[in-house]
Length: 300
Image 1 (cartoon, rainbow, N blue to C red):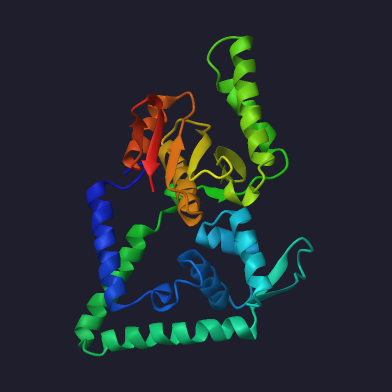
Image 2: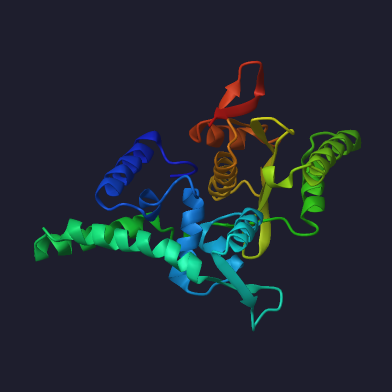
């Protein structure tokens, strides 16, 4: 199944999620939601589970944009929840671990999770326990992509990436040199808008990589004071069998960031190969704007 899950499958998974949280609560279901978001709780529990880790490993494991994660970790450090120490093997990285304050904040919640799981299992017979284990292993296997269908890695922008985005946009233009120049100017303006934003935490950019090679990009921007965000750049280099998979990852990253940032609407103008992205956007819940069919949007 390419791209976003079908409505039936997605609804079935969500029903199971709600059933699971009613019977075996997730950590953030037991926590004070006014203190931190579910994503922030996920990061803290991942640090607790690892003991000591680095930001790059957290970003890969949790599929969180590196810039967004960096801001989150800085906030944790200011609040005394984590501490950083020099990484012996890489001077550019810091080892991250919980402080005693951070450990205390998570201990009660994690104990509550363990106790709730235990109470749910007490009434099971040994045969039922074995059946549950086999079923959970099947769910884990089915939701884990194989090596042949492995997800592309999303990362934040590095020096040179924005020039690469502008170059790709120019090459994609249909027509002669004038059309390519116009497309290049348009892309350069989007990049300039991104880089000069008064509040850079409200914008985001992702680069999709396969085997260390850039394979696609998405760039999300928002006008100051606006509740609407737009995916101003979205492309995947090769229209092969993995196009939908990488495109879905880029769109999903934008949606997650927009939700976490409190935006109300997300719009997108896909790249010049509309026939590749329109079905994917439609499966992800986007619809053409009535006043302009080239703009696709989604209420959040």
